[in-house]
Length: 420
Image 1 (cartoon, rainbow, N blue to C red):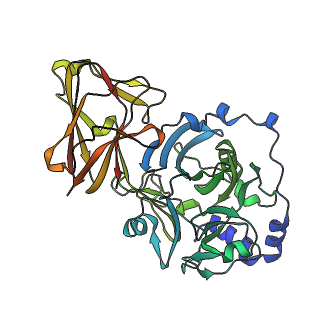
Image 2: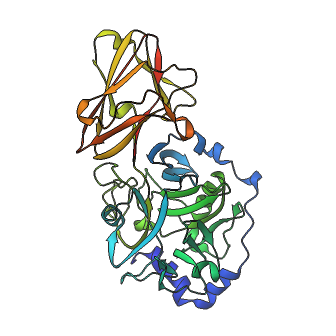
Image 3: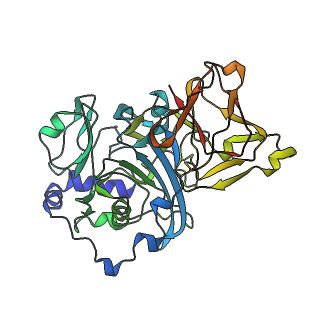
């Protein structure tokens, strides 16, 4: 909390209470006229076209580097939570001493996490902080907004004070508000936020989807960072009704279980290198809990044999309805084995998804040491077109060997394992 960006933000809340009150009471500025700004599609941002990876049941991750977005190189990471998946839960976490988001998330068994709100060197929150129904720090009257998690798990973004916070399980103050009622909601007096920096923010769409976004920055030629107005435009393009800026700068961190060596998927800036190693210690964060999902895509799957025989005819094809964007087409009269490396032990449901019109293989089996049950003869369809094939048990990390065969050509979209 020692860099100029933080000092100026703290000044808004602490050193100049009169000025901060004016900021809080100023009506949101009208969004810039559409005729004066290119659309985000023209800028190059189109969320629908981003490749998305399922990192938890109902939790999608996407990332993208742009040579030019808002006139500068940019690097974004996005987590999308599906509200229909009731096992997905958000929790605010805090400690009396500063910690790394990745370390606390791993320790507490989360599947993903982002850094949270503003704080001081002594790990005190700047504004409202409520964890597990207990208020640790009270709100400032100039509070610009808060991420609120109800006792039944309902997540919202709110302004002001009152009953909503008092009845919440968790609440985390931050600011400024980026989007309200689907339009940019930045007050013109908050001039500090017109500089480009790494950013962390959260938005909620009209259909209930929750988006967490991190933006890399302070890396010349690789990631310039964004102003708050640019960040708000991203959330409007995502269809968010409300969006809230969280602590950014060197604090900006997004973590996903099992991703790389540390799980950090953005490029924290404190070490002044464009890599995952520069993570700053923070005072609070947002943890995401849910069921692990291992999607066995091209990079994780090895067909056998690799070079010779009929498998030379096997190829990955693009399919509009394919989960991973590609699927495997296997000619008829062929048995194909697939090796998939799995890093997490436990009980898993084996599921597959087929492209439209692709027939099922006639026979499916897997290696005996993982035989919790025989593959199901009658396939069970799950949400979003996935079909349950059966269940396996892994006592440790290892290789899952799936064996498919059929008399006619068949196709297989991305396979996945879902934590039981």
